[in-house]
Length: 220
Image (cartoon, rainbow, N blue to C red):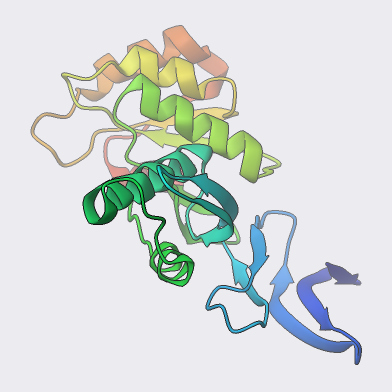
């Protein structure tokens, strides 16, 4: 990571020539970038990937070490391990390891829209569809482990039949402020009801409310 004046950038340097390869420029203190390095396609050369993690997976029949997974969160690594084990069980009865190159290629292509999805940077905007306390706890854990924000504002909308208090309690330790709003679903919890619950969990100084999602983004 290099910094010159007020402009920061991320680069890697090729050995032994020290040729510079710039990955991204013009970063600010409001940007958060996760970087993993791996030989993704197995050609003996290291690819640099922005956004993701290197994982070691233990299947039913084989071990798969230092594979790139372009998703955030320990729970996504666990999901990947379950998927690998399921395929081992399906194609080889759980007794034959999978081809490592095939696993590497498959994991490297995974996409999970709406699950810790980084929509933009500067400022960083993350979308996550956690709709219960367990999902919110996984979200909070990933934010703590993989992102470092100077200030974090959560925009929250919850369906009426969901455990809004449990979701808010899971997020409370990792967010500085929350903006509650209503989404477009007819099942969305009324704004006043959600605001009352948020005030109970977060306290008055940490809670704002907005009638619509665009308004909530403006407030945040």
